[in-house]
Length: 212
Length: 212
Image (cartoon, rainbow over all chains, first blue to last red; front, side, top):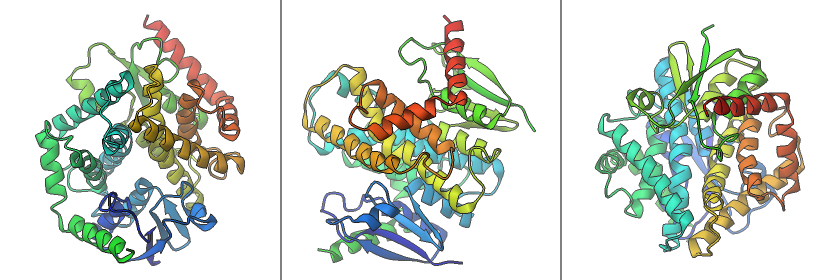
């Protein structure tokens, strides 16, 4: 098998540390026990080579032999094809994992990420659009609460869908957005207690600290 | 092969018509020339059976034999495995299609959907969070403009990635958000001129009109 190389920034400011998306990939690689190497690109100076691998000038991307893959969802789906610890092979369960993987990245994160931008800006101005956005997130969290009350993991066992959903909800939790959602909050606690998350988190923090 | 059944609402208000997400699935089915049947669920009264198929109480979902799949991204990925008109079989091209499919639903739509909620609310109040959100969308559109200047489709030929990216950008265009991005605007024009889109759009409009 080809060597897996994860590329992330050489450094980021304090605030996003622990939340940069290479964490999702590190976490999946740890859970799958796949060996990998970490490569760095400049945060301050993003050149043509960077954009050729990640067209938005973001990170991460993963190299697997001839393939260079961007978007954490696409990377986790790819890794899931290399490990049955990340996506189960039974067709019904596999389909469940994939739908929840998209649910995390689209139905939930399209509400939670913009909400976190407002929180991040310390902006609590009540405007009609903001009320709409807050309602959008609450509707998603209410439904996730109902789902997570009844199960430990999104599919039959822990999967890439849990890595993504937990990482999405973790950012809501950072701004105290899960206070009224105990099942979501407990889910974040039990996913982030896994050795794979703890290793990924520690490695990301050390990586960016080394760039200081 | 099992019959494909697409489930959507029986009716929606005027404003979202032409933009309900069953359109993405209809479009993919038309492009792939896969036969399908449309099933309706109540928009006004969403019961347990609805939530058991679509945990957020949204539409669409697709039934394919024993499988019932929610999230338009997961559905289009599934259909892509049934048709090489939607996802090419060459591993490198397949990987490109999948990364752009995620790019549409996460990198772009997580910026464009919340932006459209503010536009939808007629809300132009300048607040720090709003400035942050608008900047997030502009950054994504600038990069999509650079990408689409150089190619006709996101991967080697038209694919599910184009269906999703075009549908995401179409909603930005609805609120005149592509005025400064001619390559994006032209891309939306050429994707939505395809017979598959036109049929899907017409069918959705007729379906909801029949529910009036």
